[in-house]
Length: 284
Image (cartoon, rainbow, N blue to C red; front, side, top):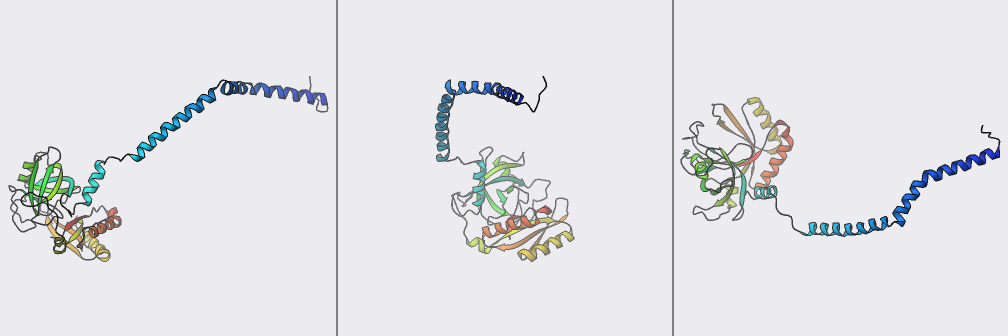
């Protein structure tokens, strides 16, 4: 039958069909409502939700009130900040290497304190401890310990905190592997705990080593830029194992370790895109 838009009966019939279609479409929803409301499912969900909320609240309270255990990373950071050894018991964590093999050419060469390097002695190189200091070194990988005397400066490799003599590495048990994870404590000659005398920071201030370069143009350019921003630049000459002349570019003179640390961080921000990795060392 054709639909006549001018007929009121046709409009009434169309409206009734439309209403019936709506009822059919919503019938499943109405059925779902009976299941959820009259069948008690919503009441069960609300009950379970209350129990879950209580459990989550208890777990959150326990998590917030219990102290968090120290992680190895935070312990390492604490040790780094105490590397100035301002009180007995301070320590430093990091990687140690050794020098004095038959091939590296250091045997018999002058150390930072002027004495000739003897790899059979229990000595070491450290960047900031005063020359003549004693450190108790513990190999964290095997538990072995040794007391070494600081008579040289170094190491100059990234991530390392100590260069032990050949005998020192042998005593600590890492001669064959080359490096080891260690813990350092500043001690007196008898092995008892010690701390740094602030007077040593005045007599032998800190400086920041920015790079070790061989090209004269690069050395001059970096030195000029550092001098304009941070003050006097010092160049220390040394030779590689192959006899190549290298100049260590150092800048600044700081009587406080914290000031040197801030300068090193600023230098890293300004010149980090050139691959420099500044670290703090004593002037002598």
